[in-house]
Amino acid sequence: MISNRDRISRALDSLISGMSAFVERELKAIYHDRWKDAIKSSFRDNRNPANSQSGAISWDAHSLLMVMWDQWPRVFRQKLTHRDRSLVSELRDYRNRWAHQAEFDFDDTYRILDSVQRLLQNASQDDAAVIAKDKADLMRTHFSREARAAYQKTQSTRRKWQDVSIYALCGISLIYVVLAFFGNQYWMIAVMVGLLFSYLAYQRIHIIPPFYYGPHECGVCGKIIYGHSCPYCDQ
Figure 1 (cartoon, rainbow, N blue to C red):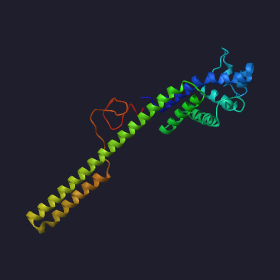
Figure 2 (figure 1 turned 120 degrees about the vertical axis):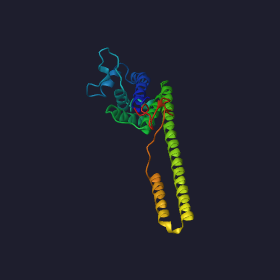
Figure 3 (figure 1 turned 180 degrees about the horizontal axis):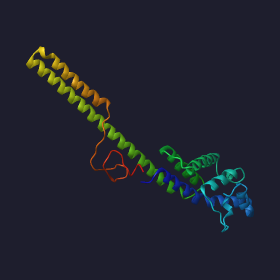
Figure 4 (figure 1 turned 90 degrees about the vertical axis):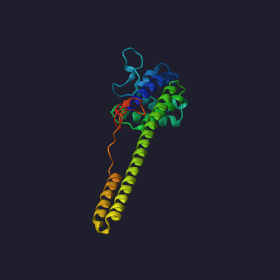
């Protein structure tokens, strides 16, 4: 099962492959033969993508977004909008968190994929279709997991109230039998029976029982599992 971090890695790779030619083309249109010097001016360390031994630009997500942000006023504002600049700023922050091994939940992962897709679409790049597919897969996985959790919660609640109803019926029946067949002088036994079944019902309501399942198919990944949670989906 692909993790959120893997999805983000693929989205950043799509961003690099989809935007690098666009960025180079726009830089050449403004700076002409000095376009590599413009790239170098955006960096003050050894991360400069123009320092490649082969002479080609060695783009990564950090350098691509850095150049777009730094060269925005002169180069990219002609082709993209102010909203696109906000996407660049947002993706720079997410990329830094990704580089520092941060954990990403569903909301953050979907936001990153959506921002990458929008930026690629607005730059008229075909790689946006790949991100759209990953977004759909992420949504399907998330809502399948939510539906499975809701179903299990509903089933657990139903079984709980079924058990409480049985306890109540058994308790009332035993109390009636004691008082009807043995008389009111055995009221202490009737009280003890009532307290016992009241305690059992209270435990069943307030104590969460463990889940035990036989082999069944995970609703998300489709693999055979034996417990409440799927070890393949949780990796």
